[in-house]
Length: 131
Image (tube, rainbow, N blue to C red; front, side, top):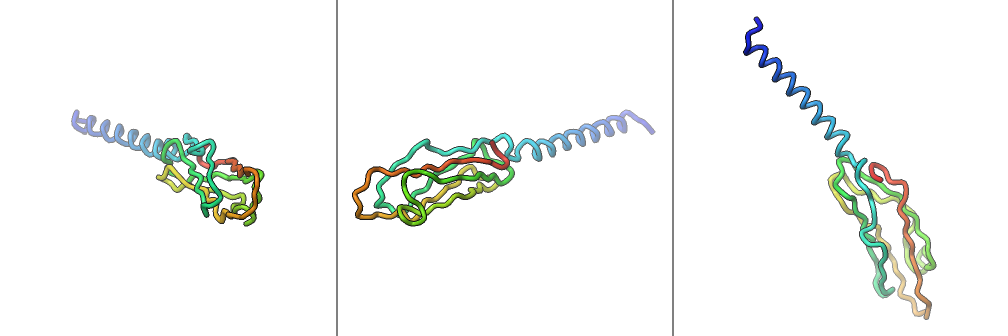
């Protein structure tokens, strides 16, 4: 029997289902990381070689519902492989729900050589679930 109560009830159920589908779609497509950008916190940094490690902070513009990964390459005038520092090309993953991650330069060698300033250049590329 199509009473006003039944019609209203069917409308509300229909409306709620449409809203639920919208919310699920928004959660699945809207917050999964595709709108986030990934970048270093600072454009440059410097320090003494007397420290044993350094962390390069990388941030997302907003938290993501998916893991975000970004490749990085290492170049510069300093020599890697344990001569001046230890860091190879790699991939940083920022876990879902987080907004920061670190690329760690380890094994910074405090040698006794009198050298000019040396650089380590880390370049981000090929992000996944972000831009």
